[in-house]
Image 1: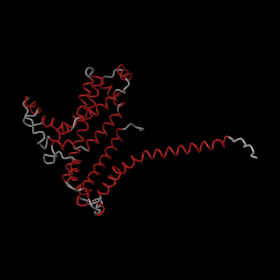
Image 2: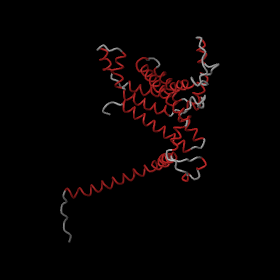
Image 3: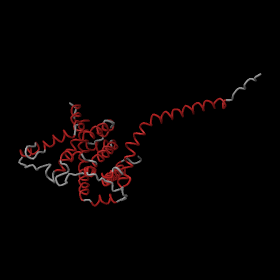
Image 4: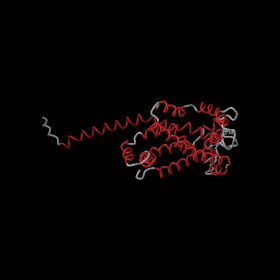
Length: 315
């Protein structure tokens, strides 16, 4: 004869519940890993492994003839990096890239911020039309942009030299001059890229409280003082974001010289990324990998400096 079961205490009753929840959590965890597995496989195969392999290549003398036996190459350690610093073409490409960034990034940010301010407070009619017009170059194919700018900068029949001729100025051969080719590419890059910064600045400006602007105006601050002391501190994180993303993009500039000048004349517009691409095309995989990581290191250092000096204190 069975005896009646004693009443369970609250602690005993809680044990099966916790066990059930633990089992459910484990099932959810396994389901999560199962769903994540395809992404992890793709990430390892197409991202992590190529990165590891390229680091390995940068310390070897691998060339295209070694592709069948990529692990039978000679380790040269930092010889490829030293070769890059001794290469006069890479030094020219690094100088051109620095020139492009130092001039192009501030110009792009100034134009983008000016356009955003105009759209936020100055232009009231056809605002949507101007937004679309300013942003259109961003989504336009670089090939189409190159065709238009080649027409504009043509030395004999281009629109720019034609307009300069109306005021008695003999325009140069913009893309054929070692002096004017890089400024021409910078102007094209600013025109093509300021729309992205403009959209981001516009979002930041619309977050500025109107009460603060009205209060500062009542206190006697003019428009420039309101912008400098009220608007700019509020949109400082936005400025930092635009500056960092624009600088990273310009440090890797490739399309402009590739479609417009092929790096000429006399390597005056060749960039570090374009020279790296050329070395990959020539089959110098070890040297090209070393160049790639030099560019990456420069980007990381400059980005860290920008965050150090432009981010708000306490971030």
